[in-house]
Every structure is written in C-alpha cells, then in structure tokens.
Image (cartoon, rainbow, N blue to C red):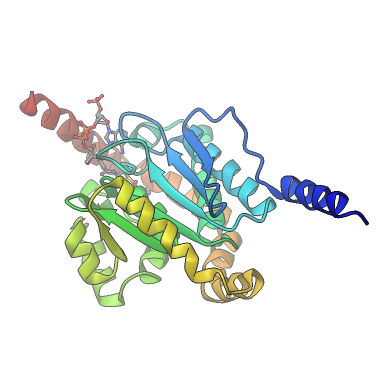
Length: 284
Ligand SMILES: CC/C=C\CC/C=C/CC(=O)SCCNC(=O)CCNC(=O)[C@H](O)C(C)(C)COP(=O)(O)OP(=O)(O)OC[C@H]1O[C@@H](n2cnc3c(N)ncnc32)[C@H](O)[C@@H]1OP(=O)(O)O
C-alpha cells in the first residue's frame, strides 16, 4: 500500500473516532483540545448553572458521546467567574409537578451513573462556588482543581433536605468516613483551602486558566497506562455503588418525590429561596 493511502486511511479512522458533538447544546460549550484530545465541557446556564432538567439532559448526552467516541478524557468547568454550579435547580423541587420531577430525578441519576462510572478519566476545574449538586458533580470526577476563595460541600441539611445515599457514597469515595459524617450532618461548605486540607479537592488554582492547566496535566499520568486496565480498575472501585442505584432506581425516585413534597420540606425550600432573594436585596 502506498504511504499516502496508508496515511489517508489513518486520518479517516482518526476522524471517525473523534467525538461528534451536537452543536445544538443550549447550556453547554464543548471543545476538544488539539494538543491532547481532552474535551472541555463548560456549563453555561446563567446566572448560576443551576441543574434543571434541560442542563442535566445535555450533560447526560455529552457523556454518552464521549463514551462512544472513546474520548481520552474530559474536564468539567463553568462559564461563570464565580459559580461552578449552584447545584440542583431549587425551582425543580419547589411545588414540583410529579411527572416533571420524576424526569428530572431520572436525568440526575443518569448523569451521576455516567459521570461517576465513566470509562474515560475526568477532572473538574472548579472555578467558582460548588454547593450541593455542584459538589456532587465535582466529586464524580476523578480529580479536582479549585480556584481559591470559593465554597464547596454537600450543604443539603442546611436546606432541610437529606442527601440521597448515592450522594453520600460519592463523598465517602473522596474523603474519610469521619469527615463525611461531620460535613453532611452540619451541611458544611468548605473554603477552597479547607477542602484541600480534607482531600475534597486535589489542588488549588489561582484562576480558571491555572485550574485548566492543572486539570490538563492530570491526564498526562495516563499516557503509559492501557485505557482498558484503567477503566476496569475504576469500575472495581465505583461499580458496586452504581449497581446499587440501578437496582433501586425507581424506589429512589419515589422516595425522593414523597420526601420533597412533604409540607415541612416545601416550607424549608421556600424559606431558603427567600434567604437567597433577601441576600440580594440587602446587598443592593
Ligand atoms: C428531601 C430529599 C430529597 C432530595 C435531595 C435533593 C438534593 C439537592 C441537592 C441540591 O443541589 S439543592 C441546591 C442547593 N444549592 C444551594 O444551596 C446554593 C444556593 N445558591 C447560593 O448559595 C448562591 O446563589 C451562590 C453562592 C451559588 C451564588 O451566589 P451569587 O453569585 O451571589 O448569586 P445569587 O445568590 O444572587 O443567585 C442568583 C440567582 O440565582 C438563584 N439561585 C441561586 N441558586 C439557585 C439554585 N440552586 N436553584 C435555583 N435558583 C438559584 C437566586 O435565587 C438568584 O435568583 P434571582 O431571581 O434573585 O436573580
């Protein structure tokens, strides 16, 4: 075979393996780094990237595309300069329509299973606050770099809600049992340096560019590691958590719906929403 034909075939096979991303994402920017083929997925749902059904569905789709295309890795970050994501969209939980809530929760479960269990390596460049569901997404990644002077943590109890067991398992996969218990029962939000001290993040960064540089450097660790060995090892560590949710998926949806619709929980959410609004008014 002529050298030029061989190189053409190689190029064709490379092209067919490249991730094909929908250009129709409304709440995400997706770009591939030409130097290392790592995909950066940027959350882009102003003002605070709260995770509603639309955003979760798009994240789920992009994770499917990355898996199909055998991506060498993904970085998750935000287009905001102060919020990574504010967690679940409280409006999806406040006076929810039951059918919509079920779809919303199903989409969240999907994102968790795909991100926590992704065969490709993942890093979060956390360039802003990451409370609750924001912390969950970051913890699903294998490596976290966080810009100084922001907050991260599972603060659900502060809202009068309970973090589901799979949120808890994700934190247990990240920090110690003791620190998880203290953090969850008090709904603690860690400052960046405090998060580093307990191992909730792996590195601090001065700004987003520094966070992206450090996140990109993480993937160099796998250059000499066969992807299949890497993926199986990750699955050995995380797979049983995912299996547990798969088995209990419907029950998890029903339990969450019945908890979230309790009058006391709804009052707590209303109070919390009012606090957010008051904060804005008193700052003005
Ligand atoms: C019962 C068991 C069942 C279920 C368990 C459910 C698990 C839930 C996990 C979650 O993720 S719950 C969500 C928890 N999230 C938070 O506690 C974060 C709340 N937000 C903030 O603390 C702040 O907004 C911020 C630090 C992220 C950003 O602060 P700042 O930049 O100053 O922005 P504002 O506070 O002025 O917010 C702008 C705008 O956005 C609205 N907003 C904020 N967070 C959310 C949210 N999570 N969902 C929906 N909307 C949110 C906020 O009210 C403002 O709205 P305006 O209309 O006043 O502009």
